[in-house]
Length: 493
Image 1 (cartoon, rainbow, N blue to C red):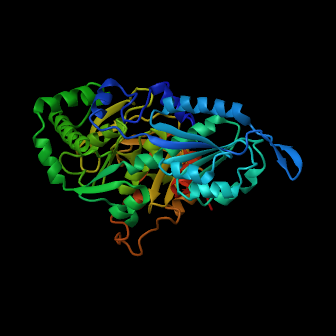
Image 2 (image 1 turned 180 degrees about the vertical axis):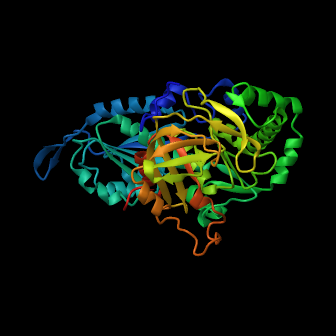
């Protein structure tokens, strides 16, 4: 497997896989065919505009002044760059292109108000002052990226005034930074189009368990359903279709099969086909289930949904569901919900659970065994071999306003009989601090043993989600656009 997991390079990975606005783009044929059952998300429209004079000469107080600027040639180059980026990403559409001045900010604001986000490109600091930006972007309250190239005038001194707004401020000569920022600017639009299916209701922090609060924060819709409805749908799935699904996607590619028998695997595949059919019909992009330990268990269903670019989350964990959606849209990478434990002797976390994705961005799959579920000794789950030596990010959005994040690197995989099937060790920066400050103060232990009423279950304290790649820097930028703070859980504040 030759895929390189780096901090950046999202846009390059997208170009390599041919990803587009729909989940499944760039995936192997079988996954792409399954994902095609879902409606495509509409692209994010981004109104681009140029700020500052373009090198014109004017008379000012009786004297001639020439404004130094990147000028019209830079506008043409940037337009070409953005057209190329639009093609690479596949799910953004750039509109607008005015230069202020001479265009009037108020008139531009009326047009830009129809877009999902703003891209502000600085040509010079003259004529593009604080008042201009105030009228334009904050009057219509849009997420924005401000791209300031050094030597674009002195206006950068005032940019700190906008830190508390939904504006991602960049000051760089690297257009790759701009590309990654545009990829993040897509995310609010994607979240607004997202429906989440909560089986037996969500579990997690109180704000995240409120469908109204999720809608107000992200624009996403949370819909609850009884597990009995899904089980009834599974009974209607053709037996031969379930057998073919089990054989093609799980049995043949598996390194081996230990505890489960063939019929148990087929039953799990039947449940997946029912969930897929219902989610695609109703356009749900994610599912979290508080009934996933039933019969059949949801492990294989969630693993495949994550392989396809959607989200399948166990134990009703709505906080992790939202986290995985944000990562999926921002970085097009699936997540693995884990039950981590701290090992101070190795300055590390051991990550483990029974529902791991298997699909890598280069089209290959991680090796996996088909096992039973550890705690119950029944059902069908996966033991997936994660890649040693690659960077990962453990993360979780809690209370809808704080993203917990811990970067690290995989050092080893494990086979402890006391842990869930998929196991690996991740480095952290301060294991002792992490152990004694789990939750970072954003989530805290209950006031008395067994009192989990504040959390609708143990999921907020217990679960985290792990993703390939070091995404902490980009998460902080996403937080600036979407109004959440990032707390590095393994570092003292």
